[in-house]
Length: 306
Image 1: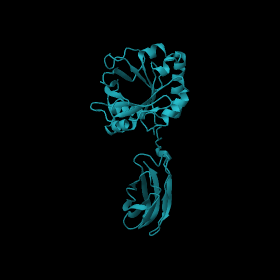
Image 2: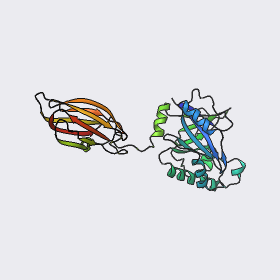
Image 3: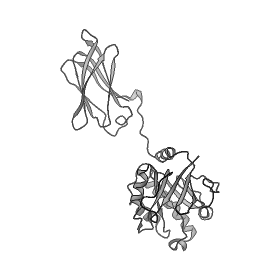
Image 4: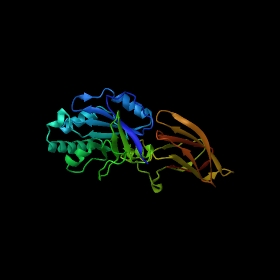
């Protein structure tokens, strides 16, 4: 069980081999001035191969964490499901002289601020075991911990804390493991941070027309506006019915034209019966109104439903 990925920086190609991978993390920025020239191509390559994608920032922790976060976030048009990562380590010249207490405070401030900026994306942290045990003071990794212990078996990082990703090798390219069972499960997890569209309830169905109609008249049903729960509800449709049909046969033909805000479309004729009562006409989120025209008198109604 488990899936495999890698993390790429500018010393990898713009299109590394994605065979057998489910996810990839790509370096975007470092400090307040460096942007990897390869990250756009690497992201496009990863997504073209169906990989779950994340971008990371390497800090210079003497700087203001918000300024560095803003620099990092401004490089990317973040999409639902993108993972956002702080690469929290500091053995280089830019960080070696920064007190570890300052490094710990930087991590807390960066994670908190980035989550405020991107509340609907998973925001997590990469670090090695040394930083996790000896620099961290809170056990806070944001939404997920990506832990590095190169040389240990994949999935056995040697820590007790919850983790989602394990960097288990840095031979040639950094190699990673995720304990979730499939690419689809990881993708579902990343998308679970998105706000959910509320599903309207049956007893809240809006009824938009109810009354006497006669042949040749053409009443218009104005639908709920775009952006509402009803407008984007799954299997959205218009529920049409007629009672007291004034004809020898208990049926009526109803000509239906749907307007999408630009033009009338999908002109069709459906048959409603007093016995069966109703017929459904499918709607799409862009539909804003429906025009009806019957060949018989009766009491007509239209209910927008899902």
